[in-house]
Length: 206
Length: 206
DNA sequence: AAAAATACTGAATATATGTACAGTATAATA
DNA sequence: TATTATACTGTACATATATTCAGTATTTTT
Image 1 (spheres, rainbow over the protein chains, first blue to last red):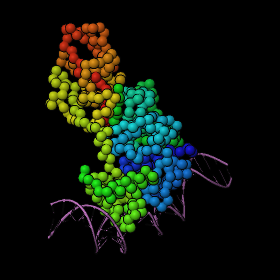
Image 2 (tube, each protein chain N blue to C red):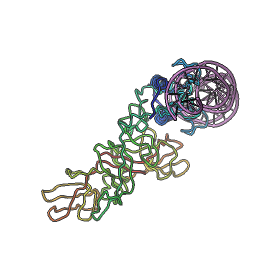
Image 3 (cartoon, chains in turn red, orange, blue, yellow):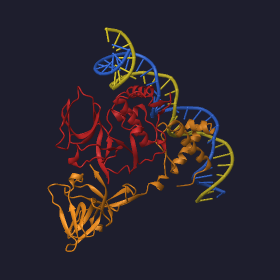
Image 4 (cartoon, rainbow over the protein chains, first blue to last red):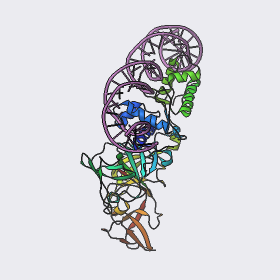
């Protein structure tokens, strides 16, 4: 399996989430709407790339003819079944089958906002706001975040959970809630940065 | 759930089989091809009947917008309404009606152990283990607790959440997880002390 | 006995959707 | 350095598809 780019991963995740939510795959237009593209051809080219790399198959001439390859029996998945993924590094697929440690059955109106998956936290960079190792953060996939939101972000190869602060059009600061850690200043022009989503809740099992 | 006819069952099976095979739902024409119908309207009317009876849902105006409604998850996913109570003082009954702020619908196998109610946390005495103000602790009512358990205990008029440590047959220590607070030494012979239950999990809504 | 549901054929149509074509721009690779 | 891959916007169009309308016939329900 060839390596996937971060944008292609977003498209792949988008398909999986759409499937979980609706029971059928998205159209090109649906993907554009979800990810903010303005031309259906943006989705089309990403889909072709994903097909070429073996992540999906596309039935030619068929509406919504997308199927994700490798995932065994996710079709019978209940509406309220949410995947739990680890805090994966190195740009590896967030919602890819191999990263899903378990699934949790949970009402989809459980938190104030709807959400897409649980992220298992590693490290203590947000301990001062009560986010501890192995806690499960309910993550809503979005890139519409505000200053002060707890976001799941990828900077180069590293995925982290931090407070989001936009300092200027080109500068974003990722702030930990732990004095042992330092703020991360992101130069949007020269660094590969992407907001995966934001935290809408937390779950801990003793 | 109303009863299904044999032809409607064939259509429902056809949808499931098509889903298993391709990863996306069939069109009306696909169903006709599979079952030998000669008009797409044959499939259409069956689909409408299945929708009316609650077996499937159909997204209007959407190609392949069929999803099978899983009613068998009622067997595995037993949800219950759990009360949320505040950290009430003055020995008043924890689950008394006037203390219930709201209820939360939650699967009863949600945490590793079963539980009885959610307790809304006040104060920061357990902040170092990530229990923050307004967090909801899933409480299992029991007095069988072990050293190191996070317990909900009442000492005289005060209800608190602390670590439990039995020091001797007659002495129990309640330990906070916050250096600004001090351990509470409880003399079981001379103080009114009672274990309400223990924490089996935590829930936070952002 | 009348009404409603079931079970179809067949034709027609608005629109939902895939997909090609024409561009622009940057990064990665050979 | 040339080439390929990535990452888009924007327009256009053929066709895939849902959906309505008009019928016919049988069975079930009221």
